[in-house]
Length: 68
Image (cartoon, rainbow, N blue to C red; front, side, top):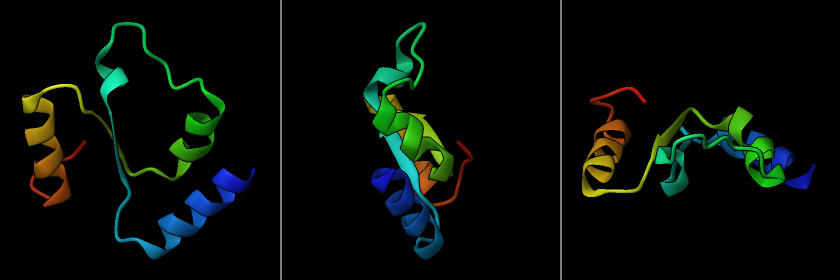
């Protein structure tokens, strides 16, 4: 509950919340951990972070050149 509340606060204060997760690229991955489930509703872009190409995509998302 505390994490969810703090993520909502961060979402209100930040221009955009981008979360990169290396596990997102794995087949069958689902954000089921309690912390991720609490944070995800306040995340604007939930993207992969497992490779150089994924990090290049992250940079593009952060600078606003691409959507998640």
